[in-house]
Image 1: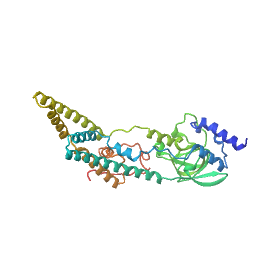
Image 2 (image 1 turned 90 degrees about the vertical axis):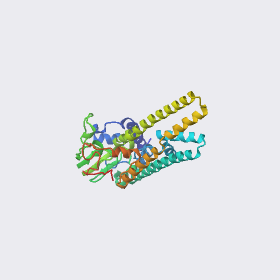
Image 3 (image 1 turned 90 degrees about the horizontal axis):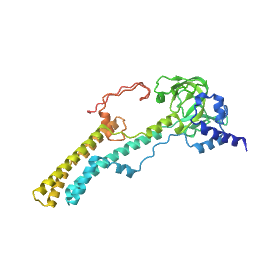
Image 4 (image 1 turned 60 degrees about the vertical axis):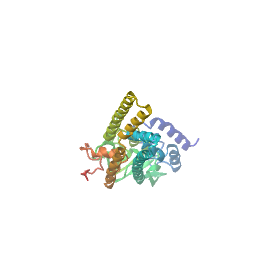
Length: 364
């Protein structure tokens, strides 16, 4: 068995138990040994290739996109559209071709508008994701090379300098006046000074001065670190997975529409049942009474309401898009429009580390 094979097996065995290890508690030399790397030459190209095949690319796993037909069918998942479709089927059974055609046309227009707007938002977000590319300076085979951040593997030696974006979670080995902006992860807008000394196990993430995390920026100084986590195993990746697993909340508009639709449905069905009972009590034919009840149901349904709501929201989304605000779901623009106060703890958490004042005039 060769030395490279032993090193690979050692790496696989140790990292299996240490991927979730508190790397800030270990000394730099111990981390290098654990990850079967070299403190000066880094990994060989062959070893880096093997690890890349084992662990995959250094990129976050995005939520699998839905097919076009499924996203189109989801547009029908609205309470008012249920009523419209029911009314359309009933009028179709009564052979009222004009009314049924109008109802189905309004329903289809409502669905098409929602689908087109959501597709545009999905396309814009996908384009933004592809536009974000990062490169990293890595030492392999003792030579400095520039690689795409997606090619990094655990055990790589990475060089950091002012202006660099940290491509993965690193345990720092050498530091020369390094200051890192970790606001995207910790919310602290002030750059944090880094060191190489080992820390206690209970040290919170924001105070781990010997670690730098993917997504943060080097604001000053230089450093060398070894990759201890990539992709979804990074702190940023864990946050991303938590966000992906979160449930979708209904907006105030959708909650009000759901409540209104259910109330309207109960009232309409109650009146229809009352009409049917009164008609039968007066000795009318049950067929004529049933038709009258159905006509009452159809006439009481506000067929134009879903279309009006959708068109109104689409206009709002279009205006937000002209102001460079991407909105994926139509009801979200109503939530944003009804917002009066936004509370943020400090610059850097929700911004680009720049204090910017914006005024939105939703009446325009």
